[in-house]
Length: 332
Picture 1 (cartoon, rainbow, N blue to C red):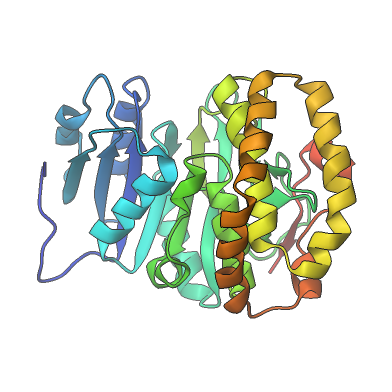
Picture 2 (cartoon, one colour):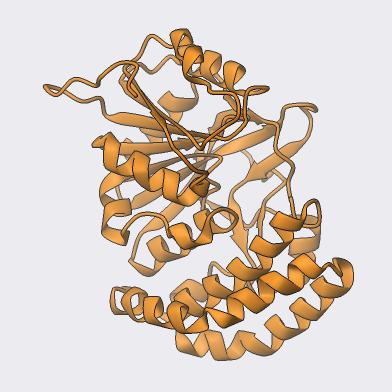
């Protein structure tokens, strides 16, 4: 089902992909924020993952070319993003959650940063809490060596300088990717469904020799919490499962051997903190699928362009950084 077809003669540089699932409470504001962007060379792909309340009627809020696609089942975020990647055909693919509300210059700042930093493949946004404008909800994605990922919750106080900061990775709640780089990776890993699928993309980008950054002037207000772990059975299941897959697929062998003892200790700690059957089920599922993860690992490692040491520079080994949600970024 299409609302407006993108021109076959000249596609815009940017395609903004929104994956919606029962998002009627926030999607109207998200679309209104897109309509107010100062940058106009973009289209929208709205993918609805079998919501109870279909959002197609909201597309009248947009004046840009828009493709609306209804899925028969909930594909999850990762697979839906791959649908958008295939449909877009633009230079840049932007992921935007329906509960993220971009400031008017958001898209312009992301594109400008991409144009000025050609060796970077992904650019994240500053996420401000939509309910408390004094709270940072995300400034760069970070990854602890043992598999725990988090959005940084602090802005660096480093004086004047570049607006772009290198980070381990970017949060797909509001991020720009070079379409060519995503296609080279094979897109998102839809086995993750949701949770850690963007972390998996970030680490695979880095292994392939690309870099990731967060743009301080590209701002969105975000409803989502800083961490969903412990807030639902599904989240506990997916986090426990996907952390293991992330490590087995992507970590160079020397790093994988080094982190396994710490990973075991962190899992024991997490199980004490969140002693749910869903977490145990997720861990069992992850371990049961280790063979598949190892097969995918061979493909990832065959395309690796950087050393284990180079990747290690962007991993965090201090558990207190995870506890405090420190933003480990470096100004360009």
